[in-house]
Image (cartoon, rainbow, N blue to C red; front, side, top):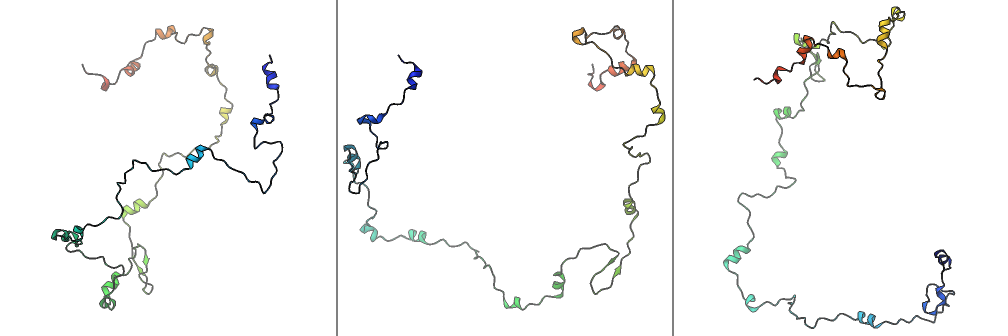
Length: 239
């Protein structure tokens, strides 16, 4: 029995050698083309049945009315009543209704020939902003008018610049000069001792962070510590 690898190694069979499995798209030789030969189509009975037009149902009743309605003789001779005539009248506008005014109203002759008064011409002038100046020009043809202005004491007080505080100290420079005494200073033994970091054992070396020293056990709080340890009076409930 051949293995799976031997079965996959076999070439793909040629399907063209079987006469019952020929293909019109895959031929060994191209067919000859001639102008006289035509392709003859043959329909199956199923295709001929589907090509027939759909017949109407034999149980269908022609109950639909024609789009052309015949007017009866009574409708032709009918006369509307007074109520129908009143309803057929168009709706009248309300009392006091006026049509819209035209976009460009026609001006009367009186308006065209009217002359404005002196007061109207004065009100038609643009409003000028009032400016407080020592010398102001009302008109180009008028002379300069000097207006003496005397500020009040409050205005002079507000106009004075803000003074620097008496104890104000300027910012120190970035680079500070080191005095000679500091450069020649020698640290004492006490300073050297305090400058050394405190040595502690690690946890794996037997250090116990929760151990309280005997000095801390025998310590006595000062009156100031006792005062600071008391709660606030507003948080204490009165008994």
